[in-house]
Length: 204
Image (tube, rainbow, N blue to C red; front, side):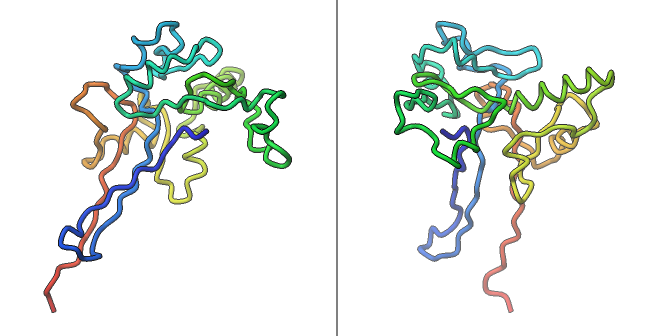
């Protein structure tokens, strides 16, 4: 079960040549401010949190998949497998694969919808630590698992409402855009257009 997919787009090569460029776009839950998935859930398993996250309550979900049908980004996934069921050893994680399970996140049961949570467990851990130390969150104090593991640092995460965070400065870049802006979903994910410098053909 993966909550992020890498989409590939090809530009050029219309003339039959091998001269084309490949673009890779990570697509995860956009955590929309006006999320189409929220009003269609009959059991209120997905809702908007006060801090702007689009939250999924797994033990409340009954698997109608209405949210997936209404998501224009197609980033909600139905769990067909009973990973945590002892009666289904074919879905179990044998040693040492069991170490890839996150101890801070419950193993979801079969028949529920899943999606990227912006690593909410990391956010809450940082908030609780700051509260215990009686201080505000430091700039770039926490990040998501995908951002931490990206070798090219193509993914940056942070508090978009705080001017001191790196993500806030990147969002002001002239290359910044939102996917499907015309739908007025007000996504929290900002993409930066890739800048390329194609070689000039036919020059000495």
